[in-house]
Image (tube, rainbow, N blue to C red; front, side, top):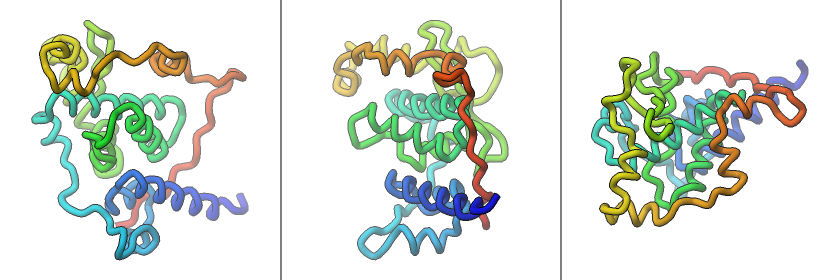
Length: 220
């Protein structure tokens, strides 16, 4: 189709801009957009706005030592990422949308960086830097919440749910009370957000949301 390459280029550049605004490393933006690191450095950063540096997150090691609040917030990010994937959004846009929603829910600074969210999403779906999944969303039989867990057997009864732990410890732990002072109001937006994914798979006209074409694979 005429203009398809232009549209794909514009989409990649907009996605790169959005990722940089969320604090992403060049490595992360490269994998999400397919744009070359040298080009990203030239377009997005300068002497007054340097890209984040340091060791990239390794969530497979980090998650097993993460504290309760980190595990809760990681679960929120990935649950929303997968919801958007089920609704038909491409993985890069789903990650950006899920992270923006996460930022709107919690007070800054975020415990989960965008690079961490990228690494968690990659190792949950086997995308980008991950050849196979290392995590999954498990359903808690007690509270019904979905929480991020290491990929293993189907039995999750022996694995603690971080949301149940939050409810059990909230009144006794000042750090949890400070982070979750009171439950959020049961607004219409919140109710819609908590609806099962299957109920949201069609729009008001009964049609499934269309998917965008995939971006080209990142060049190495």
